[in-house]
Image (cartoon, rainbow, N blue to C red):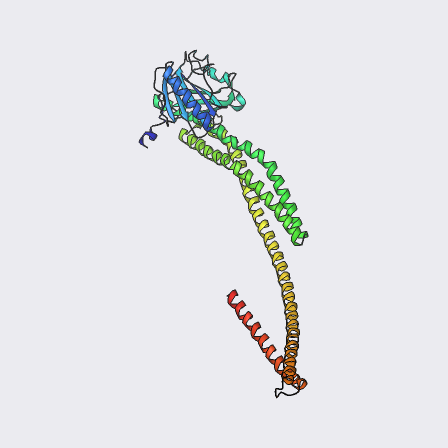
Length: 416
């Protein structure tokens, strides 16, 4: 933690000096491969390479210093070396490290050349810039003047010049580093704008689809129609959440980089020179609208997600009500069938009492005839059979009631 405070110190710079910056976007695999390559490059120069977990390393090279920095999604190489003469943007030193043997770790994000020189009376450095986008500003409370037009030169390098009037080497190094960081982070912040521009037509389609589905919600009725609408709303919500999740990192990173740019501009305390625009004024004219565009797209995504959630909740409630109504009708139908079955059961019970009684009475009649024939003192068989009918019917009816009551009690116990 103590070492992290000193991980990226301001390097003292004394003019004339040239600083080259190259920043590359990288994936994790590309960053690991670049770490291995740079370690081998350091060993080829007779110096130790960065540690396994190092994110910052410097190497003396060609009379200057080559710095390697690994960030979350990009890698930067910065080299500063001596500049011949005091004229800015002359030929680069022939021994600078970014030649054909240099290995780019990934797609180029930004490239920048910064020349630190003393002020000249004729201001010949202005001829290297586009007057329409030139910004000239004072730094370090008037101790120096810096300028850029944010346009690449023939080598693809954005040109900065620092005219040192009374700044110390530490102040020159601090100004140079802040300008290089502004150049890198402003580019990273603007990546979110292209993501926002890509998403705006898609969000527009989502909004139109949501409007059409809500219109159908007002017109449609019935469980099947509502279920179909609910499936369509769920599919739309899934597509929206997928796009929001895909862009969340880019928009969050753009906000963070934009805050870094503002922090560096605040530390730079630039003031316009010669009636022109300052660096902060020029950047805010484009960066601020770009960040507002990103924020507006995120707001549209969030609002659309909330509307989809409300519409889905309302439709799901309607489907639940339809299902409850359907279940209620089903239960009523089951109750009707149960009552019919009960009546049938009671009818069957009455018939069963009559049938069983008939057979029992018949058996008693046979017994009476047999007893009469055997000489036993019994009444006439017909009389005996007639007298037995009410008794048998009553006994059979009572037994059936007892059996039904027993089953009913057993069923209650089982349900409990």
